[in-house]
Length: 320
Ligand SMILES: *[C@@H]1O[C@H](CO)[C@@H](O)[C@H](O)[C@H]1NC(C)=O
Ligand SMILES: *[C@@H]1O[C@H](CO)[C@@H](O)[C@H](O)[C@H]1NC(C)=O
Ligand SMILES: *[C@@H]1O[C@H](CO)[C@@H](O)[C@H](O)[C@H]1NC(C)=O
Image (tube, rainbow, N blue to C red; front, top):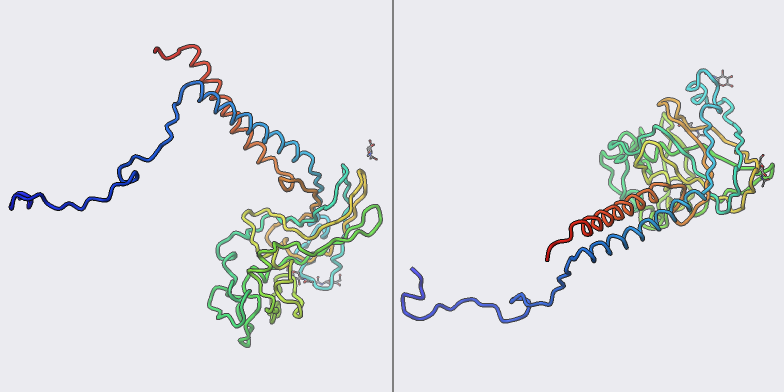
């Protein structure tokens, strides 16, 4: 039974104070979707997107990129694995590339590795973020099997990602003239400042039986080991590029670019490829047609809709 009826007095109700919000009287925007506004909006969007798309494609075409694969030419035809694992074999190698267009500095020098799954879960998680930033981090199993040396000393940096650090090196000649490759500031500043400590030094690194890749200078803190920082930002795809350095000098069209390679890194065991890439940049980054195509697709879709609505509206106007 309703309590208000029991004693004849009205029940006290928990009523909110009056406000425009509680009474749902706030001003509101209620656009009227007439055919004319819909067609105008779609046309405007399509013009903007098509313009950005075409601009991105043009800019992307202007990026000059020179790619030279070297893993096959820098190893003998047979016994590639024996060759790369032999510490006394001569790993020096030269490849010659041609700048097919004028290349404006800064020119980025990348190495590109194929068929290397840096995104594999057990590989990508084989590192310890606390250890890279803070002293005396407690190591659990995450870095196995690269956690401790056989006599129990912790490995810094631990884990398979660091252990497999790329160790080929490159120097560049342009038209027979040695050209400096600047290796400063190749890593993200946010990684250097927030993920790798400036008082953490490598220790016991690559001291085990099996060498996975490059060694690190023990007197340089991790925050300055830029090749390591670049390598440890693991790639999402099995073919990836990582920045090696920057050439801060323009390269003329038709110039001969000679890259001297120390071919150390073993991609032969897992059928991976290696290439060196020189690329100029633009405001969309390197050579990348995807952005342009994506914008163009959306722009064309909107244009199509605008045209469709126009035809519908003209052929069959809604009766008033
Ligand atoms: C390693 O390379 C050296 C020099 O090329 C060669 O003499 C030696 O036989 C190689 N060792 C093996 C195990 O292939
Ligand atoms: C380079 O890395 C390979 C493994 O990919 C290793 O066997 C080799 O000893 C390393 N060489 C140098 C000079 O660091
Ligand atoms: C580059 O070489 C091509 C063909 O060999 C020639 O047509 C072109 O004029 C050259 N460009 C420059 C800037 O030398």
